[in-house]
Image (cartoon, rainbow, N blue to C red; front, side, top):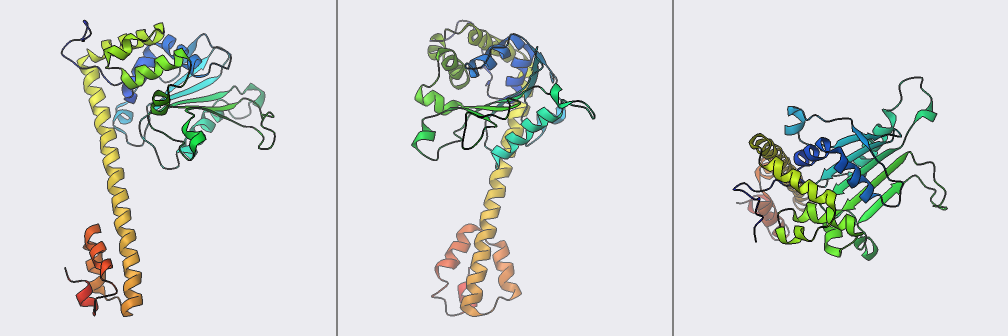
Length: 300
């Protein structure tokens, strides 16, 4: 069954961080509902001011950048809301750094610490972050705060909070109350009319309508493609760097074995290792103890 309002274009992916930022900066009421539904056990907010509504060309095409939404509620608390589709190395350090920066940037030199308001990170992750054991694999909604390790009921204030939701895991396990489930359905199944028809949350329905409107904008579609291309390029570069690192590691290990086996490592051998791929290095390693000479070992 097709949506009667669907035209020839396909709907843009709300997990594309350009699309995500456009939707929630242009519709702050939807951002309020998203924040409240992701933090149901905390006092609800009623209004936010968007602090970074614009997207620069450098941000759009920049690698290692997440297009986030910065907002402030009427009490002055700051929010950093992000959609993340790729897992960085040292992910926890990155999240902690930007959250601390959101707190520190509130004060100018000489201002009193009593003026500090909460810095709250809300990160929607389209990947599983915590998978170390069965207990972690059954939880998808996380809140990290500054608490004592021995007495977790004792908190060092509420100024730093980091909220995470692993979308795929939550969708897979059916976690969350109905409002949260509706948001998860939107982000994971936005193109599936059958699943979206079961959504009852009015705010989620409106956001899907905003996605449809944005998808009909030719320039928005072009910019979403530019952003997607930048993310693909980054992923390709990361894979290339990882593969290069693995090959270099294999070459270093083989060099050590050669020195132990033949008590020599001439320049020509180094040159051969420098230009070899992983398959060639593995083939040489397989015959490290059977080759009679270094020349025989490194024969192509």
